[in-house]
Length: 151
Image 1 (cartoon, rainbow, N blue to C red):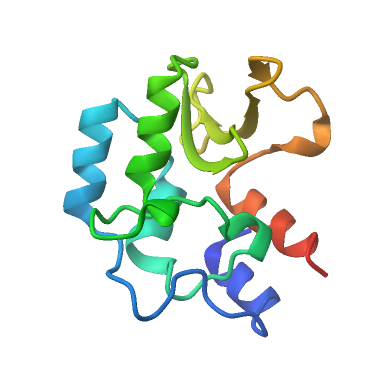
Image 2 (image 1 turned 180 degrees about the vertical axis):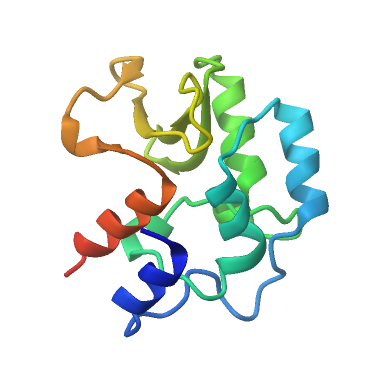
């Protein structure tokens, strides 16, 4: 599946990023990657820099999702997600992009693939959520599944 497939499949839904907010940008994203030693898959970078104003995210998924722009409010700022995760000393092989009540949706960078699977790091168990319903093969799969969950 591609971003174009997502756009076609959910053409009745609004884009993820609010039109009146400062857009994610390459400079801020690169600074975050360097500062927090992040590894984001190509699809996440493309979503941030090209598709965020075209691709929908489910309301559930949008809550706590981080976008790469320093001017954004903390509740939608990627740096806040990365900072909170780093302060807790959680595993460095995971790169978070969304926070939900103390849990983090993360890219599992242990994969040798260019697109990383997504897992949830559960703060209660201090480990990766074991329920297979909370694992996605990549970022586009995660978007698709979160949209499906809303219908």
